Image (cartoon, one colour):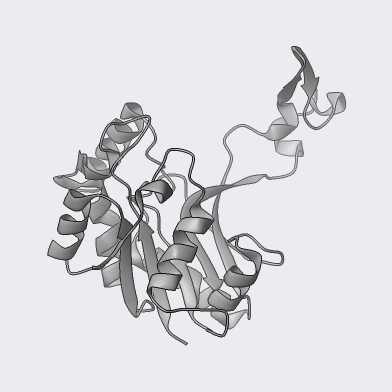
Length: 227
């Protein structure tokens, strides 16, 4: 089985202008994910999918192969699945294929190659054809509300509000850093999260997701702390 990394990076961004090319730790944000993919011992091929000429040129300068993405697949509201389906089609991977696909989003710059490899190897060893990275939530959903028609309703139940946090179940969120799946499953389901999946747990700092200027500042702080 070939293991193929797909890195989706469009030119536009809502929260941060030209986010994927913003400098973090001395290089564009995108560079951290490309380098992690290229340094992985489990990944055989790395592809960048983008509609942006500058991003494409930067990817090639780092030695990654580039797929030219249609502009209509690079909008703010474009889901990930059609982007990956387009990339697989461009690579000639169809329903009969049996490749391993690893989706690596540039917004997770502190996820490294060792974590990528650990996730892939663990999924292989435990015979999962799907894996997703997660991190523990800081604020438990057992003490949260949802809004319905202007009225707040407990998400999990009123009885949990008075319970000490340590007595509540641990909860985890998808951190967006690593998605692993066999190509035939993805082509059939057209989604990355399929039960049963292998949960790959990551620490909070490695799980930083860049969505705002404050996220960039925090990631910069964490990088400097490691030096």
